[in-house]
Image 1 (cartoon, rainbow over the protein chains, first blue to last red):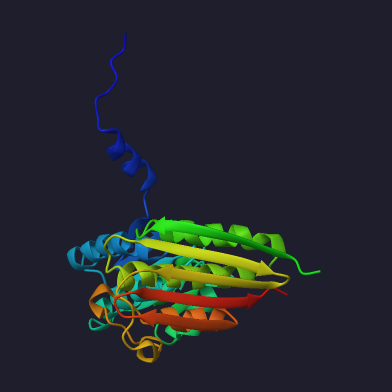
Image 2 (cartoon, rainbow over the protein chains, first blue to last red):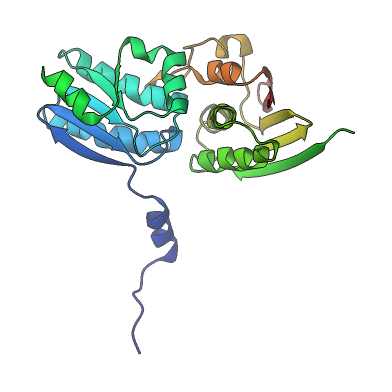
Length: 132
Length: 140
């Protein structure tokens, strides 16, 4: 008989349900954060930690938040984006958002965040703009 | 005759329940055939209220949050209730950009969003007893 792997069951449930919140890619000096989950308070902490590790360790200048894989954001997301903005603005960096749906777009407009961050349809467009 | 329906959801004060709470309310409201925009508004408002209860009401500790939802004809009434620390100065708490927790990167936009996305917002709170956020929205 095959022996079952002996691991605490609750741990495996936690790991299962906590999927990858975002994929990260660095293009030139631009950090692209491809969100894969809703940007709320629950997911904010992980995304913030992972982003900051890369921002400080990889000499990042600009940041792109890509919402193609995320359809929801609330005021916690505003906090995450503002926080990262503050990290790169002093070194002349810029922050952009891409792939936002109507709902997320309204949050950005209402919060006035578009005064300091840029919106593009695609990551490619944002990267091109940052590199020009 | 009036059409009415209601539901009550009780959840632990855990951040992973934020997404659950807004999905449940959105699912319940779906019977009124709301637009995508109306659903997004309600999800945001519920998310803000539940997040407030977790972070501020219970200070990220243990507690229960009750989400009550009632439909009366085309109107949705939502109540988010916690038995946490309560709010000392409600007027101040509702000011846009005001936050007691800037170190947690709170934007201070929570109540502003609830106000903007819902038709009516009322906050009742007593220090040491808890907070009730009451919201209304007409689904067209």
